[in-house]
Image (cartoon, rainbow, N blue to C red; front, side):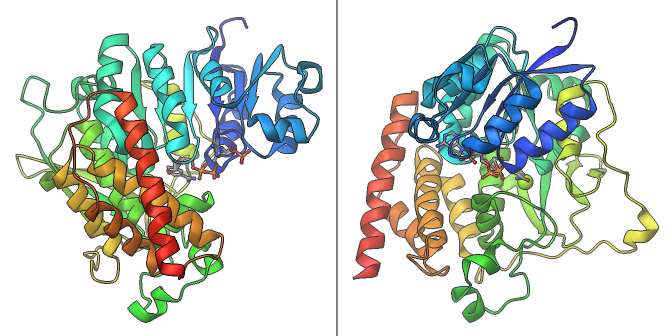
Length: 405
Ligand code: NDP
Ligand code: MG
């Protein structure tokens, strides 16, 4: 490998994976792809394996078998490990220094946690594990010496706006508050594009089709996060992500609609200063920041032209038309196991919507009713997280069956 930095790309066949691999191609003399994971897209994974020759690949056991590609020679990799075990092996491979956590949803929990426990630099795109149990990930980082770097664009923006010693605390899992108390951070604002239904009436939103929900105005992303952006649940998940990652209280995190999507979030300081980070809405920018941190290197993305943008607009989100955001704030306030329930019920509802089983308007209703049926509990261990996630999926399925009858 020479001096090149070993990288694991978890979710290599997804949108984050594609952006990460574009940067890794551009920076091929500095980084080496050690492991790649996919799930169902075996053909796409095979092409990546041929291009990058990783030491380890992983995918869903059944899809690899279906494609007749489950043996190491087919993949031309030193070895292939199937399923969740494969994802964990990819994340913890001894030659891996940096892990790009780009799996979608709660499915990325075990591999993200394994990467943190193994003391890797972990570039966190996959927000759902942070929503479910961010405090466990932070504790694990504090113990292992892992480096947590947010690459969800808003959280990466906030991270970039923090003083260097506060960045170090956040990366080490200590959050903002645990520093010397002089960070001066009073609150933050997460910006949101507003999604495809920003100007759509409530009745129009209720009737939205999957194709309409997937047509995001400024970002090109995977299906689950695209639907979350349409309901504004994505911003709700990001609110919880910000609270857990930075150690902030829910009351310190604002959400502001900013349709141009060039100001990626801001930090307010106690002296009245506000610092924000701007850039094109392209995930290669935060990914490159995380890969090169604390240095900088080219991402392949051109800088923005201020006069071309001309105007920046900001407005408050409409919580009546976008109840998912309100539910997420309630879950953030409630804390404990409530965010696990919010996340799992939302994943089930979004899947049902994408499969055409329920209308768009039912997504927040399923989340709301799942939260109502749950008594929040303190979370101290991973098994509890997995247990509540599973229980909630059964409850949410049950609610959907009730809606369909
Ligand atoms: P995609 O749906 O495009 O990609 C998901 C990836 O995860 C694919 O490689 C997929 O494999 C793999 N995958 C799916 N299910 C499983 C499973 N059960 N086990 C293991 N791997 C699985 O998602 P995105 O790239 O859009 O998003 C990934 C994460 O990053 C999400 O948490 C999202 O919220 C976050 N994020 C994404 C942004 C974006 O711009 N896309 C921006 C900020 C955050 P396969 O396709 O082979 O089945
Ligand atoms: Mg984001």
